[in-house]
Length: 83
Image 1 (tube, rainbow, N blue to C red):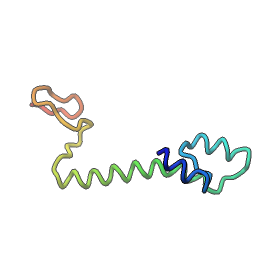
Image 2: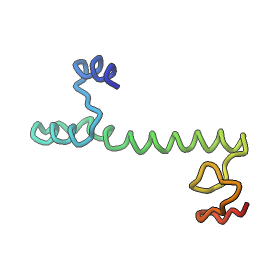
Image 3: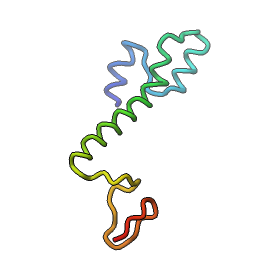
Image 4: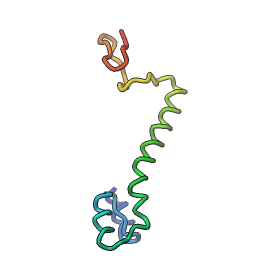
């Protein structure tokens, strides 16, 4: 992350914090690229979840539960899994 900021920051003026970007854009009236800071995190999370679900369904590890691994001796309060 530090290397990315060190190399990319001076070239594009980018920031990795949407609040900092908004604080800089507000007084300057620069709104052209603000949408990427607001949409990219949500799209990135959605893409990561979609890719994981695709991989996990082929590996048969998706249980539809919030827990990644169920204990062999404790029932799950989230999905009702019984050992």
